[in-house]
Image (cartoon, rainbow, N blue to C red; front, side):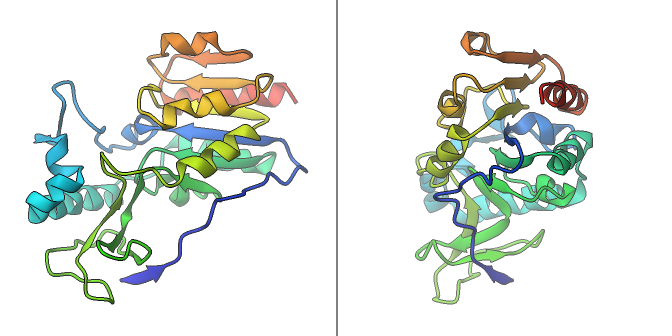
Length: 247
């Protein structure tokens, strides 16, 4: 278990020598690699109520269940591979400055080679201290259990933003979106807040691309919008082709 210091995204400034592309990704891009989506139609997550496995109260009530649940998710994330959409976004760095803001907790963007990835909702491959949240450790796909402690003696928990907790990376994500020359939304329905509001921070004149099989009606109100109503693996290359044609 390796202690890590997370990147401080506050005050991120685009470099200015290349056009700046900001990409917001959601569950749809990971689903094509075989990762289960957040919840199914009946509001359950792997047959658990959301509050049982994704809330501070759930962890307080049954920490063993929550740890086991995330151990399974962590192991699953290690078994899958990045897909064509992940690699297309990585290759976008050849011609553009790219920051990926992801709602996903897997590390598929990093494994595809993307350089700048900001995680809004935490990371499965990391755990942190319950009493000292600044103590964060890389565990990869390894399980954690009740009794696994940080260096100061407190229980470890998943490094995940649960319901009812603040999203500490949202403010720097907003600052990044404000600087976007191009803004791309991939595999998200834009109904999960606060992430869904990032499009409102993008400059009015900046082109916006939405790639998802189900395009939310409200996004059609945005200026300079291009929609690709299809899955990420086919839609992202098309959106990138369109983006490059605008340079």
